[in-house]
Each structure stands twice: as C-alpha cells, then as structure tokens.
Image (cartoon, rainbow, N blue to C red; front, side, top):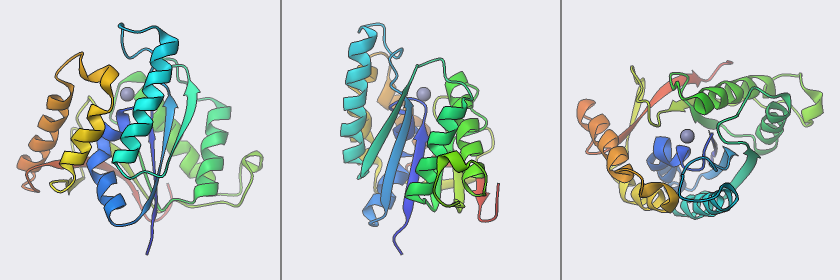
Amino acid sequence: MKLRVLAIGAHPDDIEIGCGGTIRLFADQGHEIKFIVITSGEEGSLDFNKDLLRKNRKIEAQKSAIVLGVSGVLFFEEPDGLTYLGKETKINLIRIIREFKPEIVFIHSSQDYFPDHQVVSQLSKSAIQAASGPWYGDAGLVPHNVRDVFGFEVWNPLQSPQMTVNIDSSIDRKIQALNCHASQTGSLNYVGAIRGLNEYRGAITMTGKYAESFEVIKVGGVL
Ligand SMILES: [Zn+2]
C-alpha cells in the first residue's frame, strides 16, 4: 500500500536533520512525501543579507528534498524567529492535511525548547487534531484523521526517545541532502554533529550503525 507522508519543519533544514534518513527510506519504498517549511530561515546566517538568504535557503531546501525523494516542498514564508500560534497558519496546515491526506506526519518533538521549533510543534499538533474533525470549515474539504504522528529531534536531543529507525541504507543520501544546505554547513561542524547524533542513536539502541530517534506522539486513535 502506498502511503502519504508529510513532514513539517520550522526552518529549511530541520526536517532533513531530524528525519532525513527515515524519509529517504519511505521514498525508497515508493511512498509519496511532502514537506512544509514554515519559515525561510533568513536569520540563519550573518554572512548574507536576509532577502538573499531567504531565496538561497529555499533553493537549498528544494535541492535537498530532491535528494530525499520528496515530491513537493511548500514554503509558508513566515518570519524566521518570530513564529507564533496564528490562526491563518493553522488553517493553512489543516487545509493541506485535508488535501494531501497523509497517513504519517513527522513534526518537531514537543521536547524541543528552541522557540520556533516549540511553536511549530504545537501548531502542527493542533492542526492535525483539528483536521480530523468537523471543525474549521473555513479550511474546506472533508476531515482527515492522520494515523501516526512522530516527533523528530533537531539540535536539542530527545531525553527519552520512544522509537528508533535504522538508517544505515540512507545515511549517505541524508548527508548529501544536508550538504545541499550550503549556507549552514560552514558555520560549525554541521554535518559531523548530525552524523554523530545518528551514530550515537544507532549505538546506544543497538539499532544499527546510524539511526534516527523519535517521540511517538500518536499511533492510531486520535490526538
Ligand atoms: Zn530549526
């Protein structure tokens, strides 16, 4: 059965960092994947002016998504560092969930305390919940109940991961996708830090050489 998988990230590289390897595994199995990127990450470097960085980071995200086998990336273009629990964003998320009808959604973990990540995690969760019922008629379409929701880790590792996925067969493409984010890779040992986290997860859970860990927010049922 072909699944539809949606991932929602605050910044253009968050999804790749948190679940890029797992996403590539879904793509390898022929499932359909879409990304939503809430901000364009224009505050993510002091080396570029914001307009140029916004434009470049969207291009980087599109290239990266192709490496991961993603069929589409939607950019909400909200201001980086200033996300909030806005009605319009929530309605847009509900509309996309009802249109695309994903069985599985990856969102920021609720344990991530970085402000944009925290806000986008809450927004995503509340949109998934709202999309499942008869509410929010202004978002149109018929209700859709997402089956499974998982929270990914970015720069604040999960304290108590509940699910770990072996990404040995997709780590190379995850690294290739991360390297598409050229505006970010020069500022610190970016790729090394993420590869190190995945290696740690693989070793500590004895899952494989590389792994991604998740918070299990919902498996079946309702939120
Ligand atoms: Zn981020």
